[in-house]
Image (cartoon, rainbow, N blue to C red; front, top):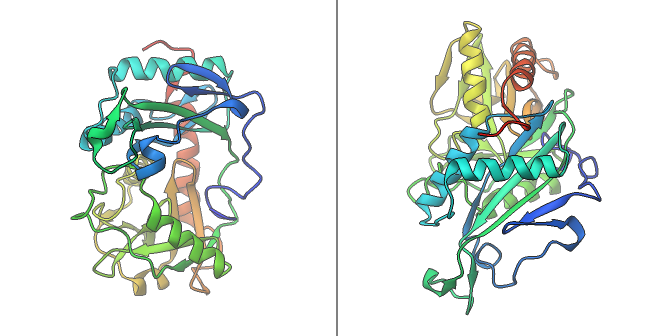
Length: 307
C-alpha cells in the first residue's frame, strides 16, 4: 500500500532462489510463465488468497483454503483436488523453498487458458491454472498510516458478493491510485449508500468510548484477520459491534486501525488530513496488536506437518 499498512515499496522482495509453483511444477521465479490466454490475465477470471507464515507455522491455513474453495465454487471453477490435497501441496511448496518466517504468499487459481480469448467460459480448455507466488514481508508499521476517503465506491454486494475473493480488484486499485496522487498512504472506500466499507486492501475498525466498531461485511470481505481481531477484542472484555459507520464517525473516533493478513493491525493516524486521537496508536489498538502477535506465533499449521 504505498507507504501504508501492507508494506513500503522495496521492503518486500522475492527471494532470488524462490521456486514458484505453476501447475504442479516448481519453477525459478525468474523463469515462471503462464499463457497469454490465461483467464485471470484476460478477464480477472480467478480467485486467490493471501496467507502468512510466522515462526514455521502457516496462520489460519485451513480457513484460507476453505475460503479459496468457496470462492472458486462461486465462480464455478473446479480446482481439481480436495482441500486436504491442496493443503499438502502448499506445505510441500513451502518446505521446498525452506520458508519459515516473515513470508506472505498468494495461492491463485484461474479458470484456465481461454482460446480464443473471449468472455464465454466455454472457450476454456485444459483445466484451471494454479500458481503459488510469495515474498518476504516486514511487520506492520507501528507508526501508523495516513488515509483519505476515496471518491471510488466499493462494489455493491448485489453486483458481486463480497465473500468472493476474486482477482477483480479494479476499483480497489483506482482508490489506491487516488491516495497516491493525494500524498496519502491508503484510501478508505465507501459503500453504495455512503457508509464506510474498508480500506483498499484491508478491513477497517474504529474505537469509540472503548467500543470496537467495524462495518458490516456486506461491501467488504469478511476477513480472516478481521474475525480474529473481533474474537481477541471480545476475549479482552470489549464490546464489538458490526454496523453502518459514517465518515463523521471516523473523523470523531478515538482510534482507527486496519486489519489484514499483510496489514496485520496497523494504526490509522490521519483521515483526510485530520488527526485521529493523539496521532498515534491508541491503547486499544496496542492491546490488540500484542494479543494478535501472540496468537499468530502460537497457532497455525506447522510447515513440517502433514495434514
